[in-house]
Image (tube, rainbow, N blue to C red; front, top):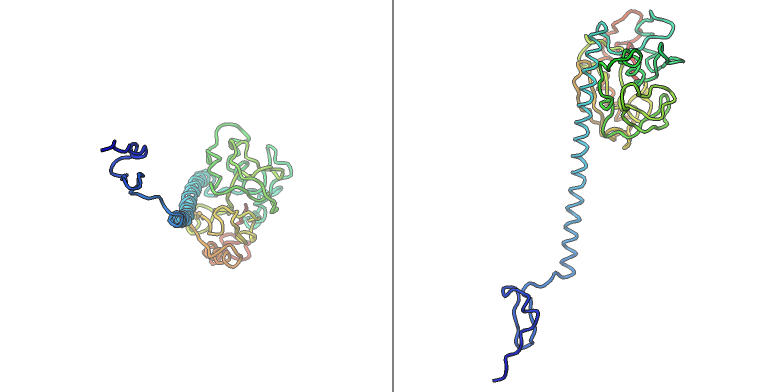
Length: 297
């Protein structure tokens, strides 16, 4: 008998349960063959399908989380509104009329978006930024001390929001939380927007609980009848709808069928219906209770 043939090198480095030696061919045969090209393509197709299913679901979950944070921010702002009203005879924050300290409520409902020519120590800035900086927190921004009603400027920002319109025009500004309340930009020359919401001024804390008072703004002007005329994918929550806060400061998600005008008019009807069908509260008002307030962004 001649010497035994040497075992091929491949058989020395493989485990016996996965490799078999074929004496006739003097080769090793793996009992677990590699994937074929077709099998690899099938695996890739399955993984791609799973990704296409999971990615939108993860996006929706992320947006839902941001929507929840947005609602929480609104509730904190609502707490500030309530505290302010307790200090100011039941009135939520509202601006006076320049040169007319005795202006009626219907007259005040035409000037809430305005600032004074010289905001300075005696004046106030435009839109909601001026409302917060120069009306709500006036004692802090003009006289020193600490903010009393809105302690953290970051609650003025919806986490989904990245851009918003300039005061009184549709040109866009980046949305960035102010470093502190004193540096909230409340002038027509603002280079960034430090809030994400629209506000309905001139409600009182004893008004009906279901009156709409606060909500996500769009990237267009949201003053008075211009509010809720269109939503795009760039708005706080896209075309899906808005978070809305009411006079009793509870917050609800209000969805839409889309961001077009007709869908938003349906939403506006739901939000404003209670005020539209309520009688006016103050003498001299022409119209209904909604005529005695003004939406500003």
